[in-house]
Image 1: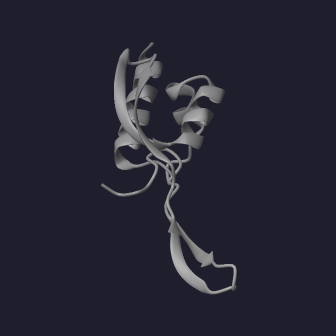
Image 2: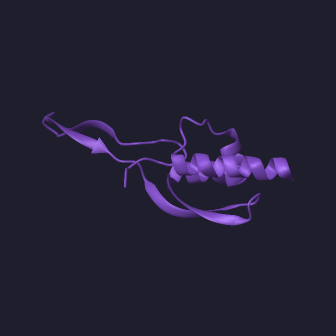
Image 3: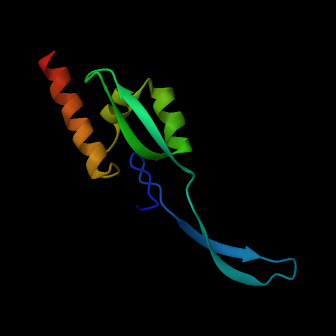
Length: 95
């Protein structure tokens, strides 16, 4: 399982641990990933995703999973999230 957000493509960053004596050693900053279940209003079902805490706040801010995926760029989404986005678009076009 990769350490990458399925909705925003946030991944690990690298940097330095800096001691009081200014000794530098390399380290990784990992994203705050959570396993969440989000409900789609258009499809009427829920989806399990591994997303960052910041992405979860963005989903709430935009008004749900459907609204978030409608504005999201395809390059940032995982294959699973991209399939969900296409299914939602089909359901909204049919309605």
